[in-house]
Image (cartoon, rainbow, N blue to C red):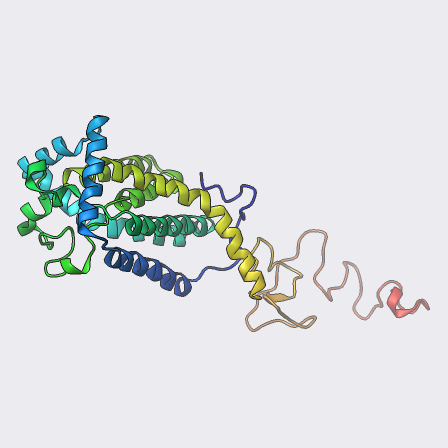
Length: 328
């Protein structure tokens, strides 16, 4: 899916990515995500109407898996409590961990993966703003949902207001249910694990993580099934926008005069090269301190070395034959 060697993408980063430039960018996007959830509260009446409309559509098409799952999580604490911990923590731990892993060990693919995640997150913020939605747990009790986060709040750090720590529930938007970025981000994590994990265990985790997250968000009554579907669709749209956004970013760098740094290639500092680092050269015959001489390859001689059989003090062939110096 995210083939960086496909047409229109680069085979290697054209600019060197540094953690001190990536970290503020990631924090900026996460800050926008949190602020967007906080500010896009919307009208509570409209949010409830949207939630009930989604529930009616699901019931019409027999998609309302939230009810049986929520009853199971409510009745069985050994399922409900781990599910609450899953919902309250992994969303904020697994995604950053995979970003760091990609940055450190899959740098060629990191830029496209990061852009995909960020683009999808911003699309999700638009959804929160335009379609505030009441989650199942905040509907009236007559609709048959129980807030498992509130039921099992004594076992965790959260209170009765979603996954926010106790006393901080007022700092989050509880009506930002559509789309579910819990499910969207989990899908992104699953794709990264499947494509770049390299082992059977990571591929299994790549499948199970978004699947279990989807079950958890419904069983805890934090999202409808269609919220999860919308989260997956948002990730799909973000994926389609990734390549154009990378091209746009490269164009902006050119216009701003930012010089791309070519990635190091094998042999760029080999024997006979006077390049010490990008843009810096040594004078002929000059060596930096403690620089090792490159081993001579068969059929070549080090600069200044006498050919085999030549006596010390003998002139090289062509010397003194009257030829111009430039032609010797």
